[in-house]
Image (tube, rainbow over the protein chains, first blue to last red):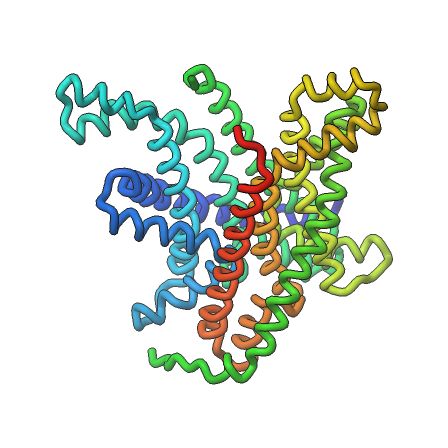
Length: 216
Length: 221
């Protein structure tokens, strides 16, 4: 107990970093993912293939390998070293964007084709059809899985400890290594992760319940 | 910054990658086997068991699913032996971790599968005089497996990918080969850029096989 109390300030400091990183990754991947998801539905075929290729590639590579590869590849491609926080966040964004793209694509494609035809029938152009007919309906199918995906972002952020960013995971490991009584520290760590992720996943379930009546 | 990409060491030590890939596949197979047995039992407890047992299973599933796998790997390898008074090697430790982790995900899949068995089938089993045990073995489980096949397949591929977490505790699997190359020959990028396509190819083959299996056995709805 004493050990857990001693470690708590360090762990909370780490949790703040975890939350910050997750928030940045979540917002970047939301923007990019929705854009790519929309393109995956409406863009010309070559762009659609490229997006599918990107998503399938990310899906076929383990997350640690993906994050390490992007982390080490970015400075090589740029030709100069960049801030390691930015690099780690970029790596995590590459992974999360693929997931958000799939969610957005699924949400948009789940809207019945008749809705778009109805839009055409009343003389709406392409953009009004997408913005006023498809999106308002798709967002209800997008939100619950997206909020659930946020838990994957938080869990994924533990991986940037592998490249030396001191977030919750690395704080846990460092404190545990420092005091030689690792168990209480690890338990405290699991509790913090549980609290963060459980609140997110129950929010997702609540959202799903709220939108459930709209399903045909 | 001058970094010259050089794959010589990768080819020199390629046996590490090759054996690493085989170990990854082994780890995934063993873990999903243990995880599937455990997950199936827990799912049966959840569906048929008393209320307190149901709560316990739900708590286990909810807890594990909300943890990053990395933390669980450290927890089992560095944490548990200090209070348990026993020792195990990294490979055993990782198999335990991945089994516990996969069981939590498989419970959900099996539970949904058991729920999806049509009530009429179970009633039909009752009508021809099958005991509850026979109903489970000959009616519920076969249907459940066919219903859950796609989800099971995806879970297996995702577990195979999760074996890459083992490198953090020095289990010599595929990712470890890449990180070894980084630590000893300063060729981490080259190592990773070979390991990643290897994972990709294996996952793609797995998905192709699974799609074929699904076409043969899965229940069409």
